[in-house]
Amino acid sequence: MVNISSTAGLLGVVIIARHGDRLGYYQDPCTYNATQSRITPLGSVQEFELGSFLRLQYLTPESPSFIEGISSDLVDVNQVLVRADSGGENVVLNSAYSLLQGLYPATTESSITLSNGKLVTGPLGGYQYVPVESVDVNEIPSLTSWQLCPYFQTHLNRTYTSTAFLQKAQEAAPFLEAVKPYIGNISNNFTNMWNIFDYVNVQSIHNKTYAEELPPTFAAQAYDYANFHEYNVFTDYVSIGVGEIGVRTLLPSIFSDFGNITEKSNPLKLVLTEVDYQPFISLFNVTNATLTDPDIAGIVDYAAVVALELSENSDGQPSISMKFKNGTNDQDFRQLTMWGNTSVLVEDFVSQLASTTINTTQEWCFSCNQTILRGCSIYNFSTDPFLNPGPPSKPGK
Image (tube, rainbow, N blue to C red; front, side, top):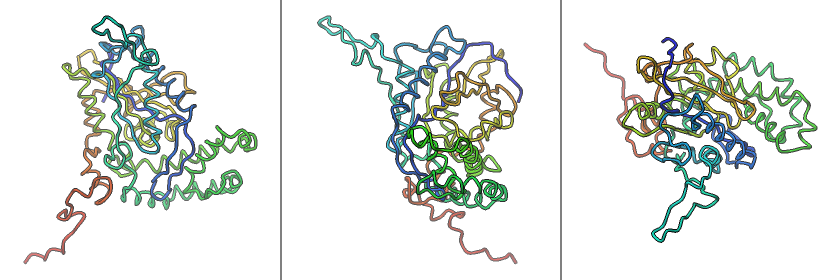
């Protein structure tokens, strides 16, 4: 693959966004099953600001990244597709709604003239209701595929006993002992590093007394160790490994989105998928983006966003450029590389990752060795030779 220069405007964009600020929640370090939480007003503002930023990038005609042919003020629901994880007290789903308020703000164009000549504008000054596909975590595992996945739990056990993990745990031991008075009843074992970081982070944002009393280096140390922890949890030695499952179940919809946007008869222009932080780690790893930008190998901030921009090169072939903005503290996108290139052909992107994808719930059930939960009980695995090996065959004569 080589860098592809683009001569045309954008055909469209596929956006992956993390939810905004929320209250604390707990992920079981042995399973990564999570408790519920709630988005905060700060989180809603972060997502609204992200939506406003994306509007300036892609819906403003003067922008060099303007999507050609998109309806920029009054949303055309045939041009926009939005999906969001509906679990966890709707933190992610509500984040999507907040983002959309910034992307397509209220407008008096959202009006209708009645037969009697009266002009009626929608409520809240013409609030625009953009449809959002709510992805039920109990039925469709595509956006939270690591949960309730037995093989992922095996991957966790393997990660926690690896030499690199044990060495990092030994390095972190003094910090884990020192931070103990500042993490409530949470275990200070290194396997629990995500929850330690999340507790410190949430309290530092929302608890004034806590923020004043926390030693000045502790927040950064917790973040650094949690980045190591989560990078090792949500990556693997090979792209088809279960550690990459966070993106392996997301890729099929991304491929489909690319196909729909580049199909000239299809009106789709912009796709938004709202998720948690885990798929970002896996995406950056399978595209080798972390080799050029190692600082992105970890937990992205609230309201972080990846934009996969589609355009045509000088030969009329659709190509992709990947850009990243790490939350509201970043003022603009940064260009990332994929396999060492700033842009690649769509067909090369798909070809490179097609073998890693988990395309259906049934494939997820098999890939996770899950036969009961998340819709897996409807499939018959009794004759599957991998999950139910028969007696050894007799040696030939």
